[in-house]
Length: 276
Length: 243
Image (cartoon, rainbow over the protein chains, first blue to last red):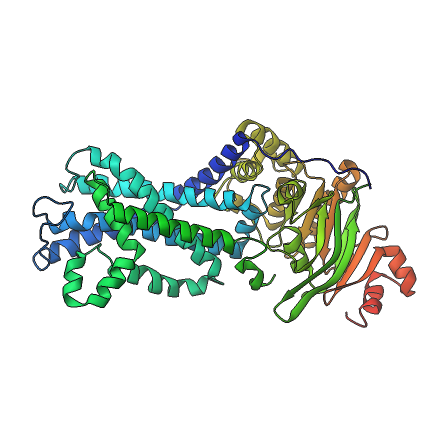
């Protein structure tokens, strides 16, 4: 045998090219699926205009941090709806990963010579970027209903919180996508993941209210990663840092991310069991 | 000379079911190798292992001397793949599909455009660069997938049952395109199929049956060894009467 050609590996610039290619494709796909964008916007707006309007009389919210006065119920649920956009987006991108895998597109991503963690990370990053765009579109509409942060800086300070919570929910979606065999099974995941996460959180009502009715449910809500995403966003929107939630979101993100990378790792992964 | 692809003592199981059992063969650079087997013979498993979708239970796969598991980056950048299922983004234009592939190999936008144009010319689709992939026929999509797989300049091309679902003319065109690439550009090709009429006498043929490699030689030599009239009969004889 002749000597084997040595491999130069990739430069940083090439990593950047790969990342922008993946993000660009996700962006183009998003532009082509206008109904996805519209439904991503309509969903929280329905909650805001119908649910919140109806429930503001029933669910009085007392003064709790970060709010310094009584706030309208619409204002209270806005961070929850921002996180909801990201939750749906995370699940949507995991759905598209299952779809891609069934259709073969996932394989053309995974056969790229870049390290697999980088490819999955790029895909995740692309999904988070799209979700942040959706959140700002929602905030732009909410602005006209006088739902806004105390100062304009809130729009900026919420950005890192959105990036982190988007990353956490995207990583969770990616982890789930590795475990789902077929598209048909996805509806079950929606029921067992999205609804419990959303309703058993501080998105719609403060947790002290939950504690009054059921301490067990309260503990469940406290452990729910979505609760911490909501609180992180709520405080950041008011230019404050929810330290406990920040730590929780960072920890959950790490766990989900490592789980997803292991699941997609050729040697240890779940894909092995799926046959060929 | 280093083999384009070297598969050695490869075994793989899904739980108790053994999909591949001690399979070894090589693909020489500039050769057209056919992996012939019925559905369920283990072709797709082999394909998934070579493309590193998951790891083999036992054995080793080298692409131009680079172990797929130990040096995946070096191995995969020398490999072009056409999967059995369509992997084009139907909503994106032909050029956008090609640029995406180039980015996944670290090729910048300017170079990607140049290579993309070249690829479209090769596939005879140069005037349709801006059209959505959805507008292509089955045969055109396959041709685009082949030239796309070659954009980053690999010297080994894997095709998993690429002619499935194509009409006779599209099949013939596709075979002609790939055989020309082997002849003119010295590409090593592994072509998996269950269709014996795609095989020519001088092709290197590996017969895979129930996870085992039962024959590994030129088609002519396999036919002669079995005393058969053609490769179809030889395949039947080797696999013990399978059609």
